[in-house]
Length: 133
Image 1 (spheres, rainbow, N blue to C red):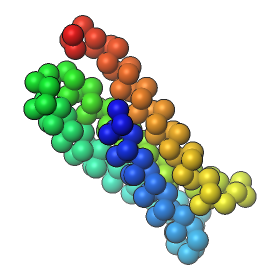
Image 2 (image 1 turned 45 degrees about the vertical axis):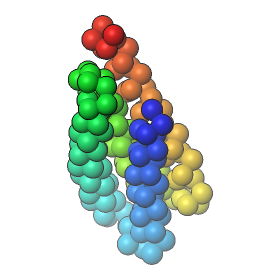
Image 3 (image 1 turned 120 degrees about the vertical axis):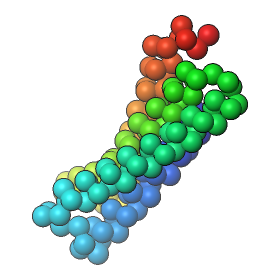
């Protein structure tokens, strides 16, 4: 679980840094916000799939248990995707409501990705408990 949290946290904070910079330089405007979100979603999805497979593969080698690898890989993928999207959305929403995006992005992104990552991990583990034991 710490690996899932650490990897996805870094993805989210990088997305937040890119978004805050784009807001600050004026490169992210109302008319291209959807395009920026779409681009970040695609990037996050690709990274999530690749990293989910890699961590799942490591889990198979380490534990010799396919279902554990599925749980770990899927949880990492969902957590990374959430982190990337929240790292993009939260600074935009924060600025829209008059808050400093650089201040609000990190804590909110980390909270969202942590909650989603652990809920997916523990939820899948609970659903697949019969195959994990």
